[in-house]
Amino acid sequence: MSLVKKFVSVGGATLASRVLGFAREVMIAAALGAGPVADAFYAAFRFPNLFRRLFAEGAFNYAFVPLYARSLEGDGEEAARRFAEDVLAVLLLALLALTGLVMVATPLIVTVLAPGFRADPEKFALTVDLFRIMFPYLILMSLTAMVTGVLNAHRRFFIPALAPVLLNVTTIAALAATFWLGLEGERVGRILSWSVLVAGFLQLGMVALAARAIGFTTRFRRPRLTPGVKRLLWLAAPAAATGGITQINLFIGQIIASTKAGAISVLQYADRLYQLPLGVVGIAIGVVLLPELSRALKAERMREATHVQNRALEFALFLTLPAAAALIAIPETLVSVLFQRGAFSPETAEATARALRVFGFGLPAFVLVKVFNPGYFAREDTKTPLKFSAIAVAVNVTMALTLFPIFAEAGIAAAEALAGWTNICLLLFTLRKRGHWTVDAVVLRRAPRILLAACLLGALLYAAVLWLGPAMAPGEPELVRFAVLLALCGAGALFYFALAHVIGAADLHNLRALLRRKPAGTTT
Image 1 (spheres, rainbow, N blue to C red):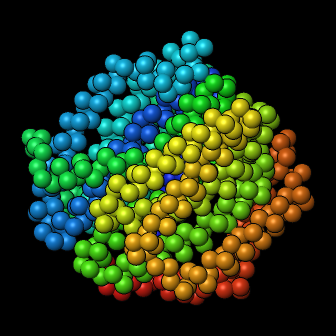
Image 2: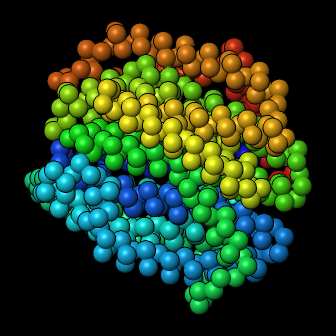
Image 3: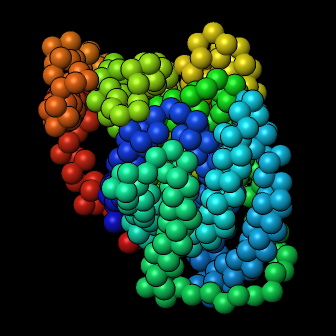
C-alpha cells in the first residue's frame, strides 16, 4: 500500500469519527448550550482526555511504536510479542494505581482543573461526580492505545483509526435517548458521562478483535522492569508530554477560562471545529509516518526516510492550508449554521466564532507537529521535542494570562496558536541543523502555490457568504441552512483542487498514481 493511500485510509476513518464527533457536539450545544452543566461535563472530561493523550496516545505513538517496530523488524514476532506482554503488565498496574489515587483526590484535582468553579458549589459538585464516572475511561483507552500501537507497527491502520467512531456513536445514542425522554440539565450530563465509559469498553474490544485477526494475542505476565520496559519508560515520559502538547495547552487554557462563565464551553465548541481537519490530516500523518520512518531508519534506507518525510509535509500543507483559510474567512457562518439553535445563544455563537478564527491561524502549526515530531521519535530522541514543548507551554501560559483579560476566549486561542508556531519553528530548525531533514525541490516549488490557492479560496468563501448569508441565517429552515453550507463547501473544494492543479500546487494525476503505487523500498 502506498504512503499516500495509508494517509487517506487513516484520514478517512478519522474523518468518519470527527464528523460523528461534530454531530455529538451539535447535539450537546442544542441540549446544554454554554451553561453550567456543559461547563461541568467538558471540564470533567478534559482531565481523563488529557491523560489519554499524554500517557496513552502520546507515549505509545511516540515511544512504544518505534521500539516494537524495531523489535519486529530485527528480532522477529515472538520477541516483539514478549516485549508487548511485559509492557502490558506494567501499564495495567500503573493505571490501576493512578485511577485509585485520582478517585480519592478528585475534589482537589477539580479545584486545580477549574478553580473558578469553587464559586458555584453546585457546578463544582457536579463536576466531581462526572469526573469520577469518566476517569476509568483512561484505563480502557490506554489499553486500546497499546493494541493500536501493535496494529500500526504491523501496518494495520484502518481499524484502529475507526475505533474512536464508537465513542461518538455511543454518546450520540445517549443524547438521542435524552431528547426522546425529554430529560434536561444534570440528568443529561450524567447519562452522557456513563456513555463515555461504555464506549471505552467497545473501543478496546474492537481493536482487540483486530489484533487477534492478525494472530496477535498476549498472556498476562507478572509486572517486571525488563530492559525493554525500562527503555520504554525512559522514552515515554518526555514523549508523553511532547505528544500531548496541544492537550497541555488546552488544559492550561481551561484553567484560565474557568474564571468566566461559559468560556470553557465556547472553547470546546471552537476546538471541535478546528479539530476536524486536524484529526483527519494530522492524526493520519502521525499514525502512519512514525512506524514507516522507524522501519526505514532501522534498515538504514535514508533516501526512503527523506522521501517519506517530504511527502508527509506536502500532504499536510495541501489539505491543511485550505481548511485554515475557511476557518479564518467564514467562522461566523460555520458556527451559526452548525451550532446556533436551542440553548446555544447568539452571544455564544459570536464568542465561538472569534475563537475559531484565531484557531484557524494556528491550525497549520498543530498539524505540522505531527510531521516533524516523528523525525525525532523515530531516532529515539524524545528529550529534544520535550524541551521545545516546555518552551511552547511557557509561551502559552504567558500569552494566555496576558490576552484573556483583554480578548476573552479569543485570547486563549491566540496563546495556543502562538505556542504551536513557536514549537514548529524550533522543531524544523533543529531537524535541518542536524541534517535529519532535507526539503526536496517538489515541496519548495509547490508550497508557495498551495498557499496562494488557499488564500484565493478564503477570498472566494468570504465573497460567497456575503451573497448567500441570508439563506444560512438563524431562523431559516434548518435543512436549507445545512444544504447551502454543504453546497458552499463542496464548491470551494472543487475550486481549490482545480486551481491547485492549474497553478502547479498539486498534480492530481500524480496523486492518483500515488494512491496506487508503493514508495520505493517498502512492502505491504
